[in-house]
Image (tube, rainbow, N blue to C red; front, side):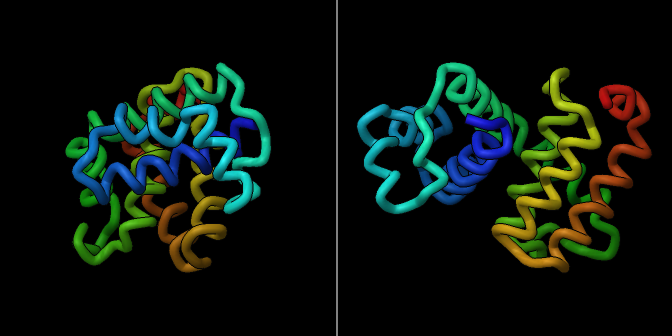
Length: 153
């Protein structure tokens, strides 16, 4: 499974965690269960590939870190979304930003440019072109002000 597809699945799971009473581990275990995952193939082609151990580990780690650091990530989103209050930003846009910021902060193997580009592409799939532009701007400011992060890419 490509990292891009794994990131899409992580986004969907992270979104589910943000909108439920379950914790990240519970939702990951449920969705990434081999039988349940294979049943999802009939509903969504994103799940058509076999989930390898590397992808499972990446998804679980990313969803867990987003859940664990949600307050920190949301404070960054609030700071860099100039003129926008956090509650006015669409839930999907917030989740995409959390994923991208989490990757830039906690994943040494994800270059910053890749995290930003993937976030923009996720917005085009799951939100709209205005969200993609907004995400690009927020991430640009975030990375610019955190030069130590920029060296990750």
